[in-house]
Image 1: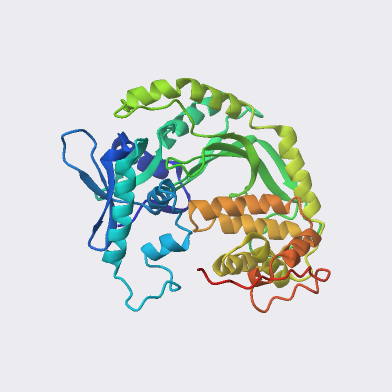
Image 2 (image 1 turned 30 degrees about the horizontal axis):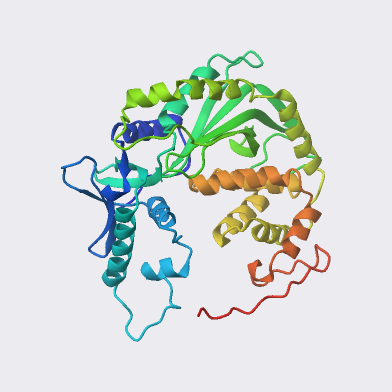
Length: 422
């Protein structure tokens, strides 16, 4: 069973249609723990819930997020070796006879069900349906979780943008990202624009216009409906040539914390809208003040400064980025190719390569992370990047990478020998 995954930045209407579909088939239940259990069906773990007393149990598969939340709830996080053994993912737990997945799952199901039946606490269980109308569990959350749908957030921000005028123009929503756990919207102010001067002529395919590169002020607003972060608004700049974003730190970060919900609380759409009325009013205030010309100019000044710093060895520079930001080999290769293809062999060229890699066909989480990496590079010179890479653990560096030509002697740390678990 596959969950929602829209790789890359999409047209707002496409993402909005999926948000609306998911909103319509949403099922939220605040349930006592005695009405939540875990079962194993055909070697697959499923959540069983009793939405109402004297009704039949509903048995549904879980997303990875929901399963991780369930493990945390019983005090057995997925990263622990015991949890991984129960999921049969760790070779270190060797036995004379390796238990089957069904046997392991039975142990886990008995543990969870017994734990839930003996304790008295409430949880918000979020169910929905996929595009084929199959029901599944998206999240298992605290009963203090404030329900804020990304669909409602989108229109609340769109309404506020229509009231703002900057440079004679209203901000516009140019794109959106969506995954099972995250939603991001990109709003751009066409009336706030500036140029980045290259400092040297470049002949790459991605370079347009020798007079400079045009940028607009932007914001990125985000939300998670599964407890993977709250609502955020970040300032950003967007490059007109490639519509790639360099995204700064949070301007606003609001957690999904509300009043305590009792079991079987009314969670209708009308009730949720009433709860969130004042909350959205506060979000609109933040949006009104998010497009700051001074903050935008400060980012442009940093990009201009980056355009004056040449990168002597592009391969080593991108390898160092991989170590600093824990990038995958595929992402590193993509950034390196875009850097040389762009033809601007400066730190600014590296920043745009990272931003353009973020705008390619990658998921919402990775794309958002890369956009923030590009902003981080506007504040770090290459010497800082090499120093950071050199002081990271040796085991983290890719094989064959020699950072000595670009950095001072790395600081070596003693590695403790792994001790067997008793």
